[in-house]
Length: 93
Image (tube, rainbow, N blue to C red; front, side, top):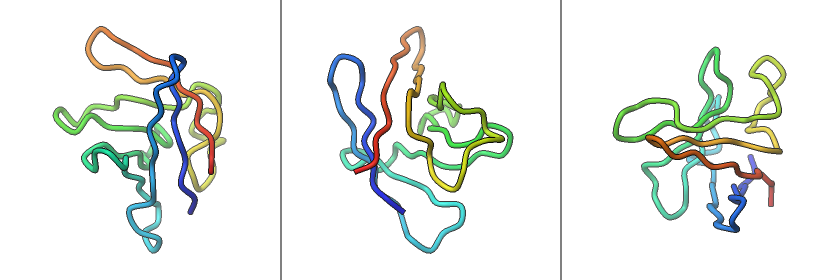
């Protein structure tokens, strides 16, 4: 399991690291806020959940869940919080 970054189109960057290496499927936590996680969701694939509401708040734009593998897919991701949404690029370190 590798660490990765999500880089927003304006340059803001968030780093995610594995929560543990033995869990299957894995969960990744944001290094500056461990409440923000990316994990596997049946039917949705790899996605982020809003820690307050539990709603899905971010996911891959480029790869449907059926084609995603054992880790969050590289490429464009989108997030939404209320009326605001952002596009990110997921890159492995």
